[in-house]
Image (cartoon, rainbow over all chains, first blue to last red; front, side, top):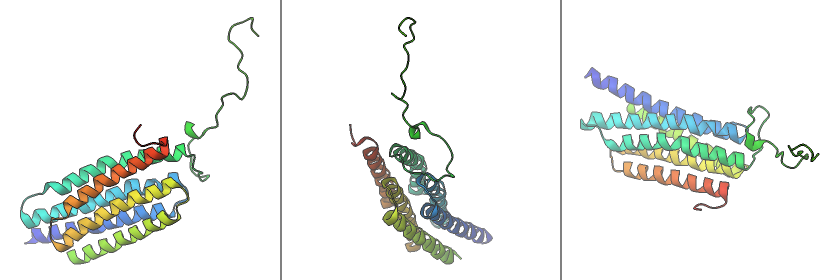
Length: 130
Length: 89
């Protein structure tokens, strides 16, 4: 009997932690200053939150039915694989569109540098042409 | 205890969805709105999982899986459109 109390406490903790992580991720997305900061919240916190919730659901149905189910595992695996890929594509899109950024955002990616082509003449490397 | 945890989690996920709607409406650029839509997909999957726990049924997990796949594919499609001006080259 005490095992079931422990399992219920674990499931309740996982549920509350998942909801809190999902909320913190969305709060970061709504509150932070520029796009490159906003990308952090949903990518990491929301993914961890939904992972916690799916683990709680898997544990609950395992306790109820006596056997684990595959669907929650599939959803967790799929979300954990696809979240970094979509975040990478979103970051590439933001760099491609040259979104404005706050001063606190560090880093100097080559996509955001000015083009150097054609600004000053390059001498021909062969001597005698100069 | 499980009831309380379930309702707390549902309230937090619904508040997260409201914040996503705010960013979707306000977001100054296109990638912001796209990020908000992607997060809304994930949060709706969380809400479906919580509904399955509340109703004590396993019927809705297939729909959650379907939403996960379609959300990823639509995000990638719109990203490709914004990056290249075309989806399938």
